[in-house]
Image (cartoon, rainbow, N blue to C red):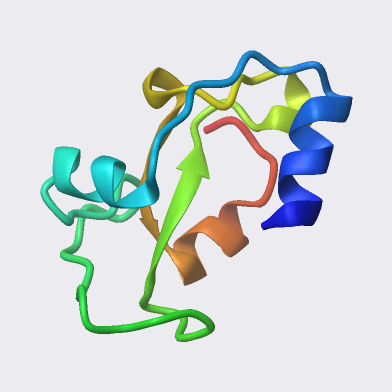
Length: 85
């Protein structure tokens, strides 16, 4: 997480302070990419664990804000990469 936050700062992205669980609850534990349920009991590096996905990737100018993040399975998030769909 430390390396990720460093990249956010270097990109000069606007940031909100939030905990991932806030996003997961907001999104009702449904993946924002495939729309399937995310199992709360799975932990990274399990491919079906919960992760925070940036809708517009930070690497492409997106911000680290509640409005620009969603819950995604780790597998879905990795497959999507830094593309805007």
